[in-house]
Amino acid sequence: MHKVRRLRAMGSMCRQQAAYDPAQRGRFIAEAEYWEKLADFELAAHYEECNAHRSAEANIAASVIPKDTGWKTIVAA
Image (cartoon, rainbow, N blue to C red; front, side):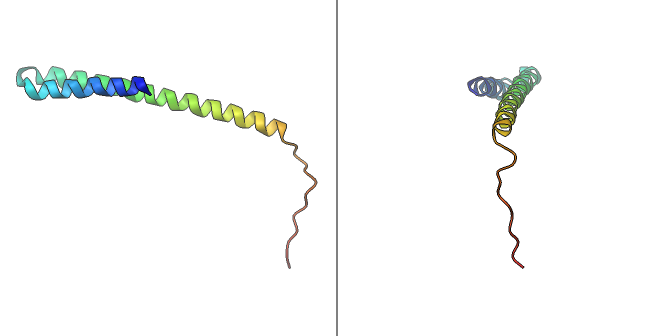
C-alpha cells in the first residue's frame, strides 16, 4: 500500500506542476495519468493477491471441517 501512496503522490506532483507551468501543461497531465494508472494497477494486484490468499485459506479450512457433524435440522410445525 505504501507503493500506491507513493505513485499517487507522483501523480499529484505532476498535476501541481501542470498548474504552475502552462507551457508544459499537456506533458505534466499525461505524466500524472501515467502515475495514477500505475497506482491503479498496483492496487488491483494487491487486492488480487489478498483475495487469492483468502480463498486458499478458505479451501484449507473447508477441508479440515468435517462435512457430517451429526446435527439434524428440526422444523417447527
